[in-house]
Image (cartoon, rainbow, N blue to C red; front, side, top):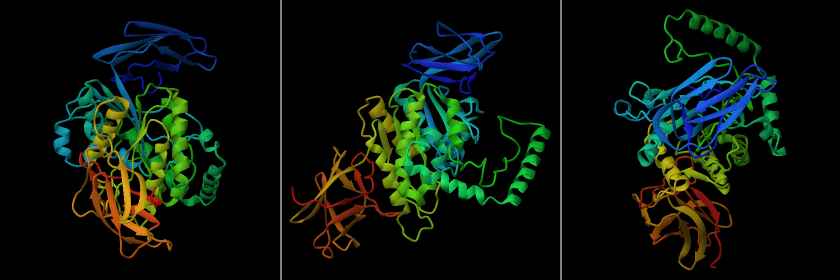
Length: 483
């Protein structure tokens, strides 16, 4: 069977359910589940795939029976919503390493929430198989779940009352390029820089470091074989990380081939994405890469414009003399909102300036869940903070207009983070005050403002919220004349 068809799986409700695997060429395969019996034959290469008719959500465990020349039983299968969680370390970050771990672990009694961690795999070509197993959420298992994914799933389960499956395919430190297929990277001439950059990396690979890695890997494999106990797929100590070069998780398309391709075309409700820090120094490339990733993943999963909700980078102080790299990557991330069925969870207020891995993953999961509740399921909730709409210059100053603040705007503490610039392009801190659903911004140092920006630095003061408690997203804009 394909990698996600394992005991404790969650299948996607209310849409056709692809089921697939491998058998002997020409072998007849039939799948029985929830009263349906569907048959097919394996192709000449042994691959087979069939489709179950849409299933209603079900909290009652069922068995999926697959019959060929042998018999495979997948036990304790539920039907609900399945979300594919991907990105780098802040998505991979576990419940046990996040805020209030003891309390959260003790209270994690949610047997209808299921989680599968896809093991790290880098490949030159799209793979059919991936390692991982579904786990039922409990105090015994939840510590290793993706924290963002778990807190999202908990919110969605509480709202909908149905099973929630979280497929955690994330790798700490990964840039966006490894998560794009070769076809996606070949789709835009602007992406030629990706392969050229990688060629330089490979050419500079240190042969001595490669030999050292091979020795470490052999020793690690030896220790696994000799280990008396291997629990839950975890080995006694960490697998060595290959040096930068072929086989490293930075390899373009390597993670897509090893960790996304084997999951296609599993039925999904949507995608959750938390990534960007590894690309902060190349923000100018990120917008096109990101929109290409979204479009290409939707294309290969063949389920229309699957919802794609992502986390904008939080406030942080990197080693950056410009103080702008994270502002620029946030802007590049936001450009993806031009695509349909997308949403951005703003976290500019809940980062830890000196910690690239903020411990508060509860609010991150909750904000992603607000997007899914409102935009995927039509629940009447505020799903985002004030969104910049336009800025116009009037007699009394610059007026910034916002959408998405139906409850009204509010400042938490002094209203900080606004800056103005004139024709010289030099930004200075500006005064600001809320006037209904607008913010009036002015500065005696800039009598003729031409540009305005808000929260435009790595770790900005950002105190503008909507009264529901969600923050305004950073922005920069040209000032328009009075309409």
